[in-house]
Length: 135
Image 1: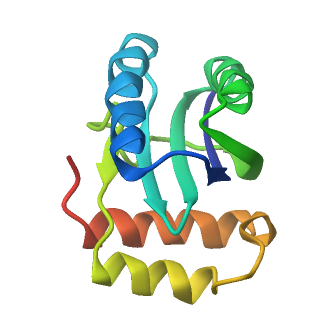
Image 2 (image 1 turned 120 degrees about the vertical axis):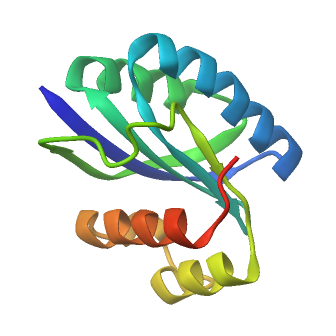
């Protein structure tokens, strides 16, 4: 069954390393038919993943063990009828003034990103993907 998974975590790396993570993920995800996007701002990672449920469960377990971030919290996990980001094995959504405003509207500074509900997290990613040039 096709599903989506959205998580946030505290980044323990800089944006250059975040981009390297994204490039690594593109290759691995393409082989597993997983799509999605990664966004990093103010030491917070937000990642949106789509694919077969079993593949997503395996991937999130691997992500949780990655030492380049901490406090991994799944914001949403649900079945979907079709992928939204079907042409993106893993898009890097660069930080811009516009994406900063979108993120701060949903996750004000100092608040807990793990408290975002799944619908809000999905809406945030849709807005981020439409407002940023993805690489």
